[in-house]
Amino acid sequence: METDIPLFVDPYALHISSQDWLRECGNAVVEYFQILLESIRQDDKRLALQLLDNFHEPNETHLGFSSGRPSGRGWGPSKARELYEILRGSAAVRSGDLKDLDEYEMFIPGIGPDMVSDLATNIIKGELLTYTEEQCFLLGVSVEKVNSGRYWDGAARNFVSRYADLPICEGNPVILVPKSAVRVRLVPNHDHFYSRFVLDYLEAELINANDSLVTVLRNGKKKVYKSDLRERYSLSREELYQFSKQHPEILKKYKATLPDKSKPISDRDIEWVQKYPRDSEVPSLGSQLDEIRPGAADAGKYHSEILGILSAVFYPSLAHPKKEQPVDDGRKRIDINFDNLADSGFFSHIVNQHRILAPYVAVECKNYSEDPENPELDQLRGRFSRKRGNFGLLVCRAIDNHDLMLKRCKDVVNNSEGVIIVLEDVDIKEMVSLKKSKGDGGVSDFMQSKLNEILM
Image (cartoon, rainbow, N blue to C red; front, side):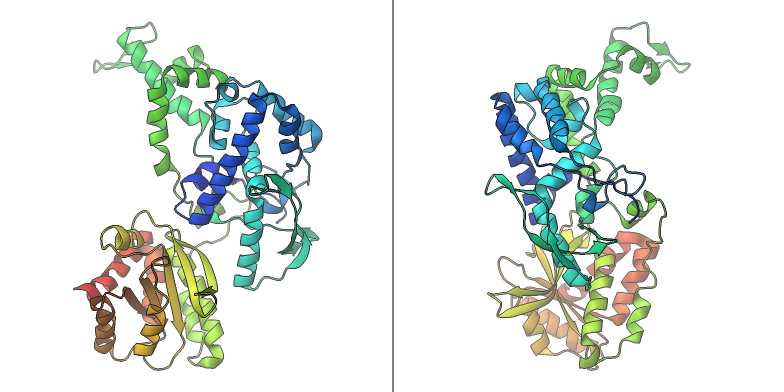
């Protein structure tokens, strides 16, 4: 907490996220900048400065390049005017071609990843406040009611503020940011576009023209060294924009590679960029289950322990867990409800290969000393719906009669009522071990084997 972590809120990651609320955050960023850029193109300086004056450096998130304690520096009128002049002087902005904030770093001089991240954070701050309140409730973090500061309200098309329940560290509020929203570097990146696509194109052109920069290697292959290309074609960001206008196929080719580069970062990625990295492995998680006694007295402890373990084991496929999630107008509650963000592995396969509706994954925790029976499966099945999906996990301590439990799970499938996989403590511990030894692939294969037992 004494410094910032060099991670950045990436508008592109928001925009393409499979998580509904993050994608809505991305849409809010797009909508805001459409209003801002239109005001600049219409020479409405008053509106443009009004939209920019409310920004500040969001030190509450502790993200960015600061090497010491977050300083609380505000943007202020001078910073707003500086950014206004940068945008107003940009050919990319004036042309109307630039629509998304994620392209600012690529084509506008003077705008780096830190500024893009700050801008995006200010726009989605309202959503991050709600997220922080949810996570603090989920994890039992103490909070205080404080003024949130200004943030963008898309519906009102204005900056607003409210009182929020936030954690306080040494007198300063803290705002939490989901791991799936941040990256070590912005995905659309001017240097990567320039180095890997623009220079590759120019090299091919020079080789075709048999230019003086071309070197013939011993094997007869022709090559142009990148250092020579950089010296001759030292393109500014404005020149990169002009190049993309002249060669839209190269920009299109580059953008086609971005989704694969925007995968959620791992816990290890996050730790490696910190000043004092911590151990992010999960091997000790399962051992804590043995200290929890079956029965009603420790049901809350078991519930919380399973939430923590599954959050670690299934990330990044499952994220944004909610505890005691109310459904059906509050008449029912789901012990744990995860958003399904998977684009590969088991939680993607159940949707794309097995055709099981699963935008969310419901989890029910039973700290029983005996086997769960039909009423417990019926309870979880009753949480299924067309909006929430038809897939869930029933987690319990141990199963004595495995054959009977498997028959009950098959009955759910055969009656076209969805799919329920039952996991006991031994399964949880096995997945923790697989996460460490074989990574996400090991966990995915294990879950697939559990599903196959039911479907075959």
